[in-house]
Image (cartoon, one colour):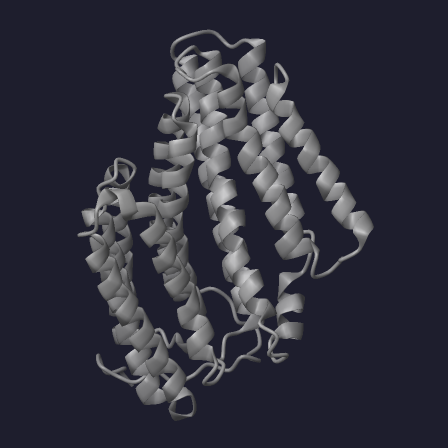
Length: 363
């Protein structure tokens, strides 16, 4: 039996056994990582040129657009993915939008948002169509689905209007629109919780984290390869390689030390909103992990005399995202399981040591 091209979406069972990521979801992650790589590369260049603060600001804004569209896709798919023809086509439309966004990232770092917003709107239009299909196929949660579609559409109109505001208002208005984006799922889910799958969501977040760490490894490897093309290996570069690899290995280990699926299963029906803190808090985990690659590449530039930034600035490009990653890992993945003061103290000491090493010769 063939699936019609245009069909409604039925809700998935949130207790379905052996639920795992689909090939389409993995393909989507891979395409989104193109945008992550573009953002990390732009941050790398900003850090090497001595514009770290400005670069971090642009990176934070750009990464939100990448992460937020990925997050919305992941949670929707967890609740309504039927792998039908219409679902695949609309998902591919969102992937196309992510590639347009990726192409616009260098311009966004220069304050030009037209192409980036265009890609973002394309992705969101595909998601609105999916929510309307879900509203038709899930009468019990039709109001929730329509609220999602209406909220996303309204915010997209605001994003288009954002292109016409004075540049002096870019940052404050961006933050207002971010708040609007975050409010949409909170408002929509008040009408009825969508049937997202705890184990599936935990796996999706874990896979995306691995891909982001992989991008960090790749960006560092490329920077080192370029350095080796110009000079012989010395102790400084060996230190960057060894330290960078250990940082990434440790970042992976710390994230997967706790069972997020079990935690999400416990909070799924409590109605406390803890799942929002877990889901939204991953912005800092993913962004910091992506920024690590840029920071390591900046350190390579420093030792190969390609960086125009000071030694402390290039060190901060590495230690600040690592400190943010540690703080976010504790808040999102550790504290829900081990809220004791002793566990918090361990992470606090690690964060202080990392930040203090900014002023060391080899952070």
